[in-house]
Length: 387
Image (cartoon, rainbow, N blue to C red; front, side):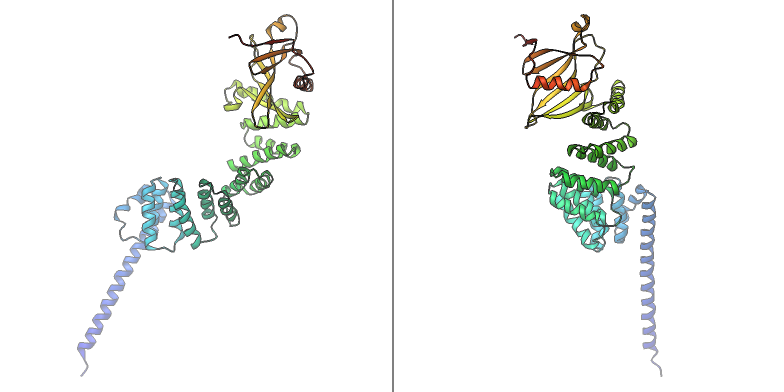
């Protein structure tokens, strides 16, 4: 006789196993469905709806927990973001995404040492992601570990789909390290790689113009500033830089439209900081001193005012004294020049018998300033404030 008991027991075990597998499959299916739903919500930026799942997330998959943490990240709730990224990592320590978001959040919280560890873990799981290296570069940069930061940013640029930031910061670090040649080279690379519509592109152009100017390569500096102003006509610092280039090249007529733009912006109240009252239009060396020439916007006043100021800067970047043109109401009243050349040294003010009108030639003014610097002319009047 067949052993029905054994047969029945085996059958029951098979039925039970099938039931358990079905239940597990339903659970996995439900979990997969939740993850899929959360991903869809995340793709549609419906972060508040995702966060509604936070209270019932105990049995969620690692990926579902990740999407909840990501929603908190986008809502700038740092503590809850890290909480859910840690929960996700606890369930699946092989996914680099939670490590990256956790590290990025730690950067925002200025916990850079902790961020470094999380970025490194993300990189150990996925070593070809430019964003991971870029974030690591940010951590090291804020820790003032410039060599490590530079290494991380460079590594980012070697990966596919590298964002703009690493290209810009490679150049910035070389600039911070006073390595102008490397910085210039890196800014040219950044210019060739990053989006022309981005602020990073504008920044690269400005620095190319600035560094080429410092090297005396004005023909290379000029097109950088011209392109910049085509993209951003209100970058007034670039107007001043272009004016200086044209003065170096003695192309004063080319400088005039840019000077007019600054005067126009001044009247509209659009200028700020060191451009608010005046702008630098020329710089030149005299002996071991740097002479910085500024022009003030003030005009039409009936009172005495300074118009062109030549600051004498020593090797310690300290201003020793200045030579300036001053509007002279008395001279104008007597039919003389509109501006007289003067010098302010300490508390002593000196006036020279050298005058200029609005249509003066800059080369004549510059020669007169150098004559005063070299003490080839003597003041006609000298005064000190009365005590």
